[in-house]
Length: 175
Image (tube, rainbow, N blue to C red; front, side, top):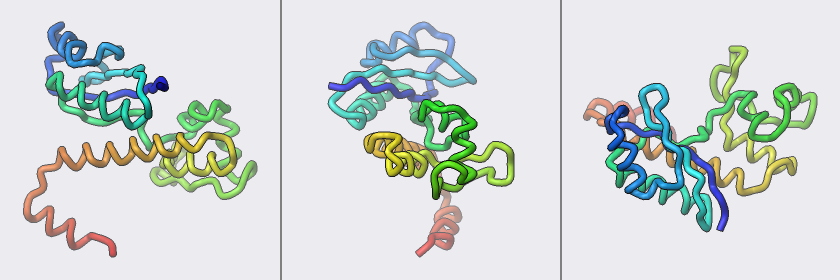
């Protein structure tokens, strides 16, 4: 068994009712700390499981059983330099050196906000690079990939595509 830490962001229950918190605990979230932030439930799990995937799937199941709507899983796959530094256990300055090419080669390029002072990277790409550089274990990439894919599934489940949306999606599909 390993200890897995992850957070599920949820909505759909009364944020102020004590019964909502009780529902989470009764549904199996008794290994989580539950808070309300920015109008959403944040359920921080500290779960023992055989694998990260098992912990993630069981946590999602328990939150749904409580009657909540899953919004996303965190830690998110979009990361800034501070997030990367925290996850690596280094300073933000060290990450800047990696990103500028002054330390290490071929650090992944940002995927968003490239022209700003706070670009965003895909943690799956960054963690894969860090594994290649022997700075993180392989399971970090597997966990990052699983969270990114789970969040994509969750986002798609929230979409109510119209016929016009589906046609546009098909037209824009890349080969």
